[in-house]
Length: 181
Image 1 (cartoon, rainbow, N blue to C red):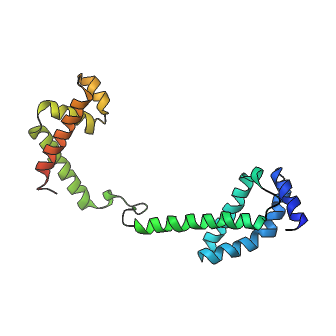
Image 2 (image 1 turned 45 degrees about the horizontal axis):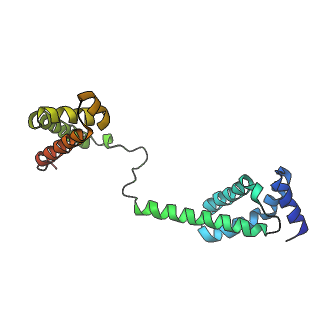
Image 3 (image 1 turned 90 degrees about the vertical axis):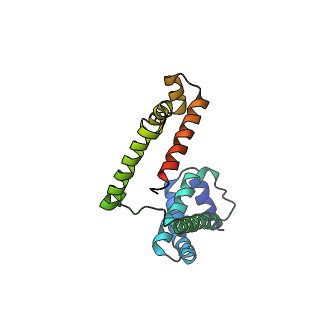
């Protein structure tokens, strides 16, 4: 490590933008090549390189001038590369569950018709198959969006009773919905 590098790091630690700029220009190309070799994509490497320098700047108070600056850059960028690979792996594993941007189930008229038909069946089952108290609690919970505690206060029931009635309603609806699903 050169004395100049050590001085620049000390100045960066004191928030010197010009010293940071000098370090940036001194190490940018080398770090970029290091990262692009790892990720094999110039655009991603550019982002990771920028993020590495950004993190250096935000954590500048903890810089240690006696340690190699490039080692620090390499460690941060390596961790960012690992983050990128984990993110990519998770996206690939779950690609079937990630909705396409701009797409909605409302774009498919057949699905809209099916959803409305199922909603109508559920409404009919709620009104015809659920006992009165069970129906009231289910509607407050699932249609009105009230919490179990809010329902218990409103109806003067215990939370446990509310939970049991919701469970009962779901069990009854599931029994009758099996033939539709």
